[in-house]
Image (cartoon, rainbow, N blue to C red; front, side, top):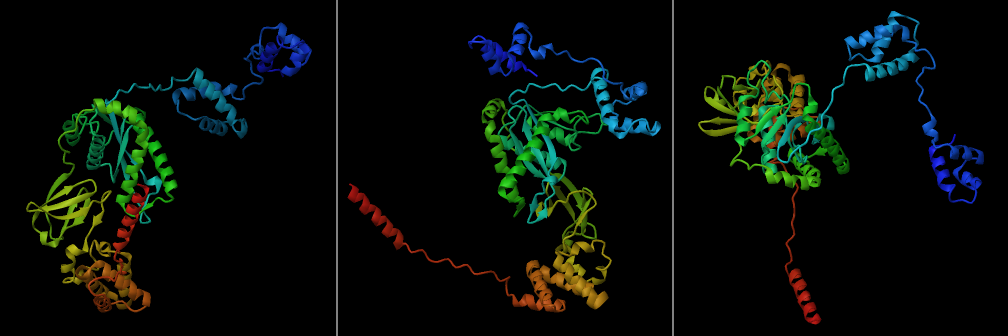
Length: 497
C-alpha cells in the first residue's frame, strides 16, 4: 500500500529526475502507480473514507434499552458489573469473551449520550498569593530508626506560584502538628503569603453542624500571621491540587534519594530530619527565579512564633497518673495530690509545677494507650510488692526485652514470689542505672546461671562506677614537624626570589 509520504516524495522527485520511471523507483512504487497519483491531487490518506456502518450486529442490541436505563439511573456502574448481571439473568447468551464488546459500546455511549463529565479548570497563580498545607502519610516509604519502623507523617507546605516547599515530621493530624508545620515553613521561607488553603482537617475546620468555618485556635494562628484562610470542599482533593501533586513528587524524590544513600535506616530522628532538610533544599534549588518573585511581594513575619501547645490542668490522683488527650501518662509520685499543668506539644508533653518544669514526657500517638515510667512509682512498688501481679499497667514495667526475660525466668523458677524479686531488680535499675542492670542480666543469661536480685546486684557492683568502655588513646602532637615544614617553605621562597 502506497503511503502519503511516498506520494509526497514522488511529487518532489518528478521535477528533479530525468524520467518519471527514475522518480517512481526512488519513491518505492511502479511507474504506472506513480502516474495514477500524479494525475490525482489527493493523497492516499485523503481518499480513505471512514466506515460508518457495522460489519456485524452488536450482540447486546436487543438488550440495549435496559442497559442504557441502568447507565442513566446509575452512571457509575462499570461495564463488568452490568455484563455479569446480564449473564446471571440470561444464562448462555454471552460468553465471557464478549465483555470487551460491551465495554467498548458503553464507552461510546458515555462519550456521546452520557452525562457531562467533571471539568477541571486550570488556575492562574500569582506570586505571594497562596500557600497550601496538608499532611501526607509516610508509612509506605518504610523509614526505620535503628532498624525499627518509624511511623510518621510529613506536614507539607507549598507555595502555588513557585512550588517552593517545606516539610516537618509530625505524628498525628493534631492542631499542634498543624501549627508547628505551618510556622516552621513560614519561618524557613522568611515571609508570609496572603492566604493559605487546607483540606477539611479536623484540627482547622469545624464539622458542618457548626456555624463557624474554622476552629478558634486555627483562627488565632491565621490572625497572628495575617493570613486569609480558605478550605476545599469535602471530597474534592483536586481543589488542593498543587499540594496533592507535590506529595507524590516529594515521596518519589525521597525514595530515589534513599536508593542513592543505600539505606532507609537512620541512627536517630535528628539524622532523618537533617536528611529531609537537605532534600528540600535540593528540590527547591530549581525554583529560585520564581521564588525571587514571591519573596519580593511576601509580607514580613511577625516578631515571634505563636505558642503551639495546649494547656491542661490536673490534680494528680493516688495512682500517680494523668490522662491527656485520651492517653495515660505516669508522673512522679511526689506530685500525688498536687495541682500541675501539662503543656501538650506536637511530640512531647511538659509537666509544670509551681511555675517550674519538672518533667518532659514523649507524647504518644493515637488513643487509649499508656506510658508508665517505673522510676515514678518504683519506690512504693517495692514496699507493696503484692500489687505487682495484678497491676493494670504491669506490661509497662519492663524497660526492655531483657527485663521481661528476667521476670519470666524468675516466674518459672520461684513462682508467685517472682514479682517481689523482679521489683528488687527494677529498683536496682532505678538506683544504679538501667543500662548497667540490663548488661548484668545479659551476662547472667548468657552463662546460663539462675537470675536473682542478688546475682544481678553482685555483678553490677563489680562493674564499678560505670559500664567499661574501650580506652581511647590520643598521641601527643609533635609540633617540631610543623616548624620544619615552615622552614622549608621559607627557604623555597628565598631561592625563588
